Length: 56
Image (cartoon, rainbow, N blue to C red; front, top):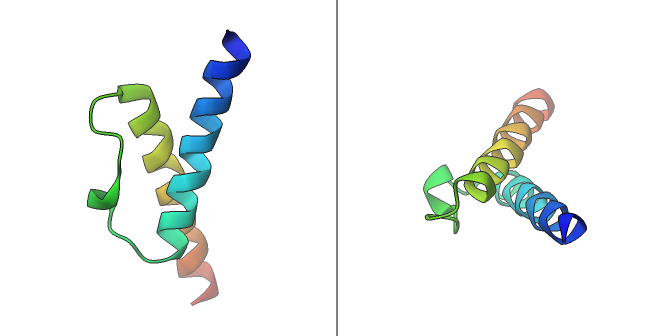
């Protein structure tokens, strides 16, 4: 059970990173009800935005 939960959060983070790299706004986040998943998605999105700023 814990592995499944961790995988879900890792997936949310990677999806957020992909959205950030593509330039989507944070309003694009598909996780509206799950706080943990939303937090992970936004963390990935922020990381991608930082990476975009460094390379730009």
